[in-house]
Length: 176
Image 1 (cartoon, rainbow, N blue to C red):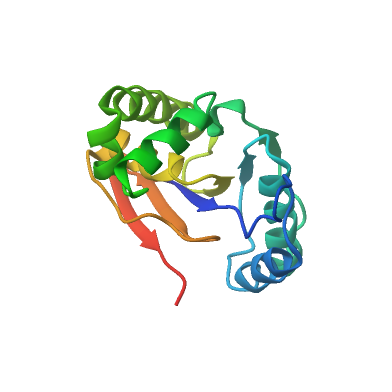
Image 2: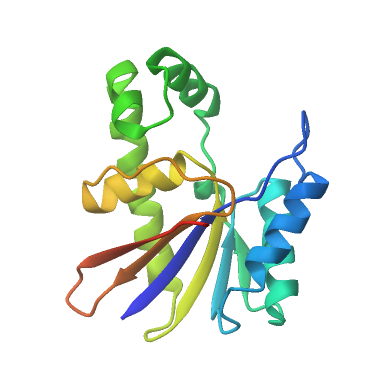
């Protein structure tokens, strides 16, 4: 069994690829609740995702484990995602599908493949952390489980477990 905790980055600063002061506080607060035994960390190439990881790990008091910046956790279709969400009037994945079904289909398959590769890098019996973006996390869940989840807020995420039989399990990680 292998597990990847996949979280959305903390609050972004206005007009910058960085965390806002409130985002840093939020990431640190969430980090205090996280386990301190991640075997590996994967992060999107966005600065706000890397900063979120840094605050998570600092607050959990875990030394930096082996880590990698993963281009696949970002999307080359970011503007297309924005346009489809705006046209749909919602960032909920099934609504975005009505505006641009090809985008959701292509990205969900791509992200499921990315996560298949990430799971290959996670040692058996351990847990990894990944930090990325919404709606890509939701698209990953759809690609792996054919399940639509509600849009994630900042620092929220999912716990994806790959069991020894090759089946995925999902637990949503919502902030209260």
